[in-house]
Figure (cartoon, rainbow, N blue to C red):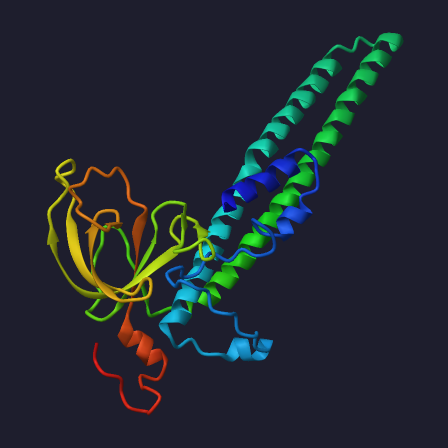
Length: 308
């Protein structure tokens, strides 16, 4: 979605049309928010927004806040990557125009060499040279336009990076899984699953959203893990079976997740099934010790919380 948006802006600029409207508004309009948690059956009403000062001062204390921060980070990172691609997309058309300029410069040199000193003849040559100069100036203008638009994209990237850093500083409790998987959550910690590919997800038409690849889509509580057999078609892959408590829907239930350690694919079933790909991937988990330390490490009564 973000790449298509950036490509559309770049195409419009290269074609000589104004891209301000597309640049100012993100993909799909003014809102770029990635779909939040979609396991609940009915969406809760949105609370009234707090004053700006209160929003800025509000501490991040719950796992729900952490998920919101992750979604914000994911959205910002996707925009950063798309706009960086748009910045790079200008390099080729700028280089192509510069090559055309070189051609006209060479043509000017060739015309100069054709002068003979005969007034009428040389006058025609001078006119042809002026034509080359006009073409060069027009190409200069085209390059300047593209470079201005490219700078706008670059400025947008820097601003998004600043916004990303603000959220990144608040999510130290989120442990991002990296491939190959190293480390495991502790029993009782929340594990986060994301979309392995762009997909529609939801328990009803009212809650269904379109998720971008990598965005959050599922949460469960980790209990334990054990080695799992590799798929017969891919015997070199290492898999684990994770025992979890799934909170999706209206009732909690135990669930077994098969996790591929090499690329973080997750399958709700037997990995021996000949599935070519998975629509779910591991995002990471919430370090409860850091989460509780960030909230003061105590419950509402002031006592230390029980161990998971």
